[in-house]
Image (cartoon, rainbow, N blue to C red; front, side):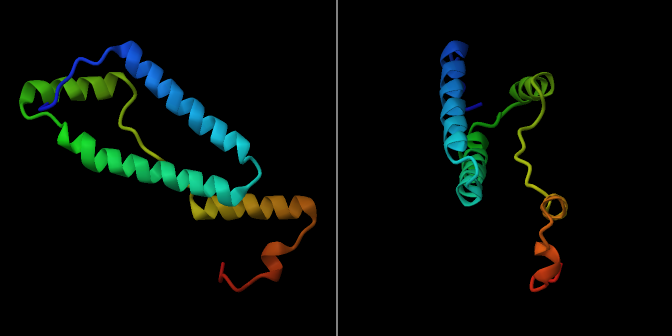
Length: 115
């Protein structure tokens, strides 16, 4: 790792907690606003991509020892980070179930999407 630093785990934990709190607060403040929450999810996905493709790739190990250490850490600490996208079919199932519950015929009246 070319830029290997011994980060104080307390500082890192504190920074991650602050980020988590900020994101959670934003999500909570826009609860019920689907468009705003979708924008928040898109922003998080973009940040994930930027960190992964930039800072993370730049810091990847340059020798076997460091690579082994990284792989051990990934295995012991919960695997590879992944931001899952909601499957469109699952979204539609949720929407269909919700409309049936409400007695609404949204899906049957709007065939323009070709679903």
